[in-house]
Length: 104
Image 1: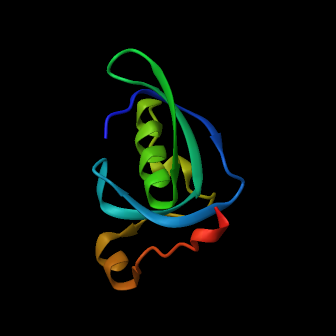
Image 2: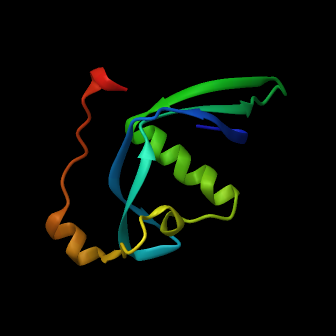
């Protein structure tokens, strides 16, 4: 997937909190709330502008990477008072992401 100059221009009010990891903090995971649906304006390789809609896990991934372009890591999105956990602990409590497709 190539998204040149991506900007999130819209997002759903429905959010979801899931563990995220990052190479910036490879040894911990943190619970991060994110919109389940985002609209991203970006430039195509021919220079035209497009808007692409992403949902659920892909919306989370794209939002995470767009945050990096603005100098932000997932830790800044975590709720106050919540700390990342060690990867070993995450592996013991992690579960598959499951989304209800009818509610985005």
